[in-house]
Length: 439
Image (cartoon, rainbow, N blue to C red):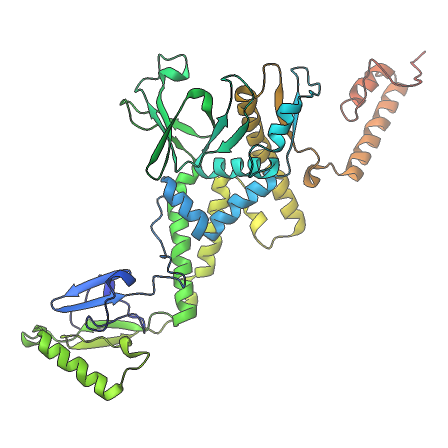
């Protein structure tokens, strides 16, 4: 068998290859290959809207994370699930003793942080940005440096930049670590004062040694480059099988003689194309024909598409993405309802609630007046409710044990109440209503 035409021409799809003289295709295709006087153009790596099938994601880069949210369905699904779960949180204010605080101005701010977002949209987006990028910058519009902000906006990490002083170990405040914070949008650059922003993060911070270099944040999502790229590649292959029937075969140069590789000059090539047009006319599928100087051979590819295991790759990549972000993959498959409820409950306990504490602490420190604490409550979420039937059975067994223990003289009634207080909301030392102490 002769030498292949090249790596990018290995698999030929009907309707994918075009002659150089057919039309100006350079700005309409993904691959252009020149072989002597011949030029081949490869399409089929574009969807119907013209978006490129990107299969080389670097998830440590902010722009690739942004693209993954658009094109990688499992990644976007998991991130938006996190946001939907966080949207169930209820913001409230307390003092240091846990008593409710009434602050109309602060309550109004958290209810409507900016003209475009209410509390639900604002805080769920914070959580999605936090899970995607590892940090979420917040811009605060204040009249006074220490006053309650008039509005708060989420700064998208692709537009936010934080440069370091090159020093960190001996610094005692932020000014000694951060040289400059600014927002870059198009050609505009807005430098931020330290009162105008704060950063919520739950990731690693990488502080550069050189002055002026960017401070970056590392997160588990950075490790998803291969799963995201593999999922995109599997979807590209699946799309090709559905729309084109898959690769038809391999085109190769079947002439190794000296004359076999001789180039066609422009006159000869034009004459060949003219003869083709006279014979076949200007058909819609005309450009499915490749005109080449080479003696071409064709090897058909016949195989079972199940061998590609595209479904298995889809499932495997989805599981890796969900695990890296912090949710159980059972939330995204056809598992039993009980398993999904258990996975959802674990998601709240292991991810959403701990993240809410990080977010609450950041707003308490940077937005709330001294002495006021902002909290987010999820106790009302259905999957976090205690199974009342099981709780009743446990309580009955505990009470029976306390009664038997007192009758046997092993414990006193007050000691039994102390144990009972671990299961129900009572104060052993301050009973409500009539209560008969032991004689």
